[in-house]
Image (tube, rainbow, N blue to C red; front, top):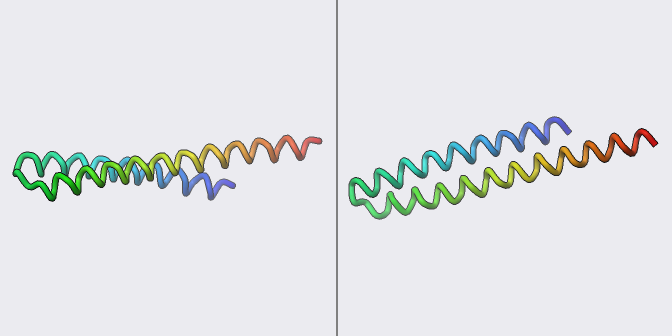
Length: 75
C-alpha cells in the first residue's frame, strides 16, 4: 500500500507544479496580450487541480483501506 500512497502523493505534487506553471503562463499571456498562452495557462491550472485532487483522493482511499485491513487482521 505504501507505493500506492507514494504515487498518489507524487501526483498531488505534480498537480501543484502544473497549477503554478499555468498561473505563470496565464500571467505572461495577459502581459503580452497572447490569448493562446493565457488560455493554455488556464487549462494547465485546471489540469493541475484535477491531477492534485485525484492524487489526494487515491491517497485517502489507500489510507482508509489500510486502516480497514488492520481492523480485519485484529479480529
